[in-house]
Image 1 (cartoon, rainbow, N blue to C red):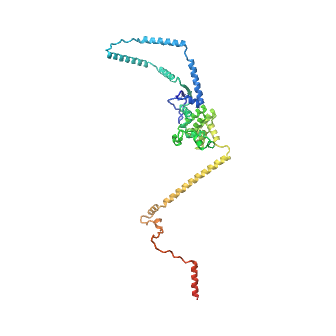
Image 2: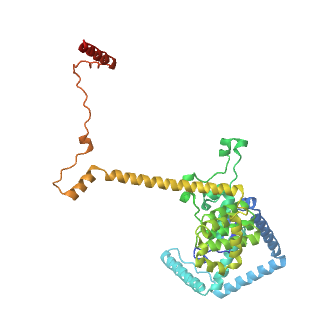
Image 3: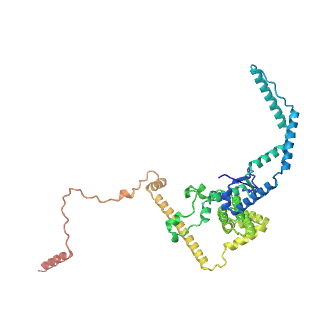
Length: 422
């Protein structure tokens, strides 16, 4: 199955500095069968272009009179060319003069080449352009040409999505968030895992760890193309990828693109605007930066309404609701856990420092510095402590003698006192 559709992309994508990129090739080839099945918008354009080609071919079919006139004109032109160049058949040479015949043939070839060079040198650039356009028409006589007001890079992303139902350059998060997984309660855990979307690689084999490899402006161009082509899943994938690429240098462009898309198609791009507001405007307090303020004022027609809508979406309307209170308690609990972990780490560091300072080598070095080398060294606790030495194995000492009990001692004292009295 070859590519029978040529998409002529006339749009451009901005780079990180905001300049439009010029590409060398603006045409992208595609297969009409797959494209028409996956993208109804492009399928309608292909059918319309084919109908126009058929009508144009019917209108340009020459009649019999025109054909006869063209044949007569060709004959007259050929006769005039023959008269102009005075073509005369060469005289045959004898069979033995092969060397002379070869020299004459070579001379004739050289003369013909010189004449061809003179004719080529007389051609003008307009003739060359006409010839190239003629070759383009001949080469693409069976192909359908469709003009799109989008960049070639964005069109290639759309074609990759149509062919494989995924876009590797948009990242793993975009693929997973835009995919629909079956409910494990309905089909089972194993069946739900096996019947989910098919990724291009395993998690650790995604390029750049699953992060998007496209630029932010290319992701925004993909959103615009997906919205025009009525492909919401592809638009969501581009939106998730763009939300991962928002930073201080492009947050103004993101807010303006969200407002423009909302005005054109009604899609507010909530994930992208939420990422811009939480990660940049409020998260890093960019609203206090004078450069951000100046850029916002310069594009106030689009940025200020987007900032207001984003603030409403980010902040809840009822701060006393149960969900907000639960989130607040959770945040306080997490903050307390973080502080406890920091205190525990500081406590362990101080303990290790004390143990290090109490080592015998450290104490001896300090004593030597304080009192000099004549000061006797302090014996270590291991040397001063006397451990009990176990008895030898062949020790024949008898068992211990039982000690006198308190009752026996009392009776002996009584007997002694009685004998003294008597």
